[in-house]
Length: 261
Ligand code: HEM
Image 1: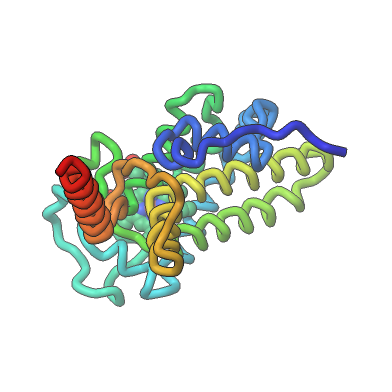
Image 2: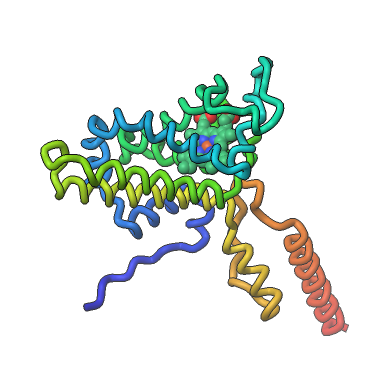
């Protein structure tokens, strides 16, 4: 059976958050009902969030690759700080403070109003603020850079924990049908959050244009506009393309001048 086909504009997917979210929602099937399911589960999941956040931090501290992000002090903090990774523990007051941010995010996943564009703006800024850009107003002057690899795997780990927490809940607490609904909604929203990290790290369209130019001497018909991301637009490619356009314009003018002669 043929389904009606929707048009999706490739350029606005890269430049417009509402378009990106609308497509991601449509594609993974995150409906208004999923938002309501998450909200309905908030009372049940809320008390479990602290344990999940503690677990995330303990897990991030198991690898120097992820633990090292937590060694620098928060901007404005001038108290004593651990000198190296070995001295940094989960009881550090700065870690307790940072846990409050992740708790806020986890609670937001379950309590957010998914019809409000501000919800998606928040999830988008959470992604952006890990790429060296402040993102939030309150983070002006702070720069945090975490690899996409680490954020992706952390999201995967969070999802795994939520599955492990929700599935064994007794039937009286959460029936099988609701469990399935909650886990599908969680899966969909976490993948959208993943995309809202990814969109600030990966400029696949520009990378493809560069690869196409290298391979065929061509590229997609139109390069998308840049967005507010430190990784957007490669200046050298831009300069080369601009030089080519100038050269082409000069050649056309030369030909016109010759024809007129
Ligand atoms: C599931 C993936 C992740 C989510 C949802 C997440 C979410 C957040 C949020 C909401 C904040 C605070 C934003 C604010 O200031 O309001 C934050 C800050 C931070 N995140 Fe993440 N994060 C994730 C993964 C990671 C990973 C993998 C690392 C490091 C390996 C990391 C390191 C940090 C650090 C160091 C801060 C800054 C705290 C500060 O400046 O005080 N995050 N994150």
